[in-house]
Amino acid sequence: MRLLVVEDTDKLAKALKRGLENEGYAVDTLGDGHLAQTRLRSRHDEYDVVVLDVMLPGVDGFTICRDLRERGVTVPVLMLTARDSIDDKVTGLDSGADDYLVKPFAFEELLARVRTLLRRPRGALPVALTAGDLTLDPVSRTARRGALELELTAKEFSLLELLMRHPGEVLSRERIVDHVWDDEYDASSNVIDVHIKNLRRKVDRAGGPSLFKTVRGVGYSLRA
Image 1 (cartoon, rainbow, N blue to C red):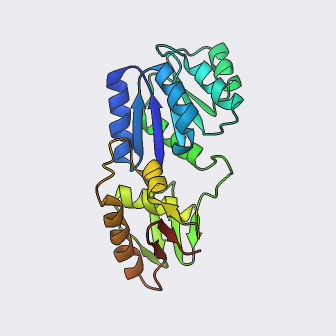
Image 2: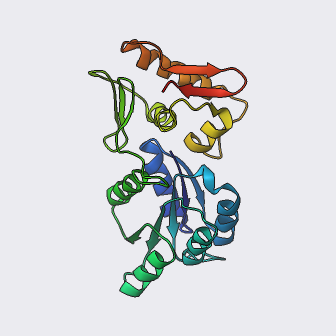
Image 3: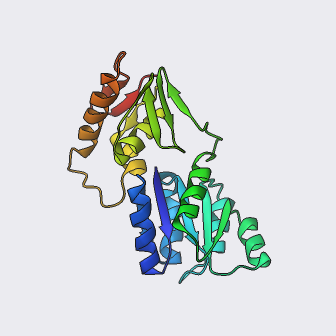
């Protein structure tokens, strides 16, 4: 899953990026309101959650969020603010934010709220994902094939989660990159192929027929 963190305090932005990436998320960061608004107008479909600070240079978070909703964009938004007044919370929620977190906050709380938003983005996706005897729980970050728990890296887990959210659908390499990697991804590398190979080895080894399908020149899919 890919997140956009819009936060102009460089130290906090780097800390959030590091912490979220350690949990297996791909994270892009921006510190300017104008840049964030431009990015989200053209590339909002790349993100599964936006963590959006209220006080930003250029354009404030309320305006960015309101602009998204007026355009019909439903990406979940978690707003961050140093202001703890009821009026500010109401303004944030009225502008279309899905949740509101007051600074200073514990990273564990932000992480829990992000996970909650990921359980109900744009279509009320189920908490537990299944494909045959393969089960993945995004909240507990566990995956099983039958009774066997799979030992996956954070990036393998994110890739498997993306495939399981779209069973039977062929996902292009570009779409996989958009949701599992960040802007620093090297398009000339074979990292996607390596991760698919590792998933095949771990998931298929657990028993049963292979669940992964390669469509040459297009991308990959998980058998429905």
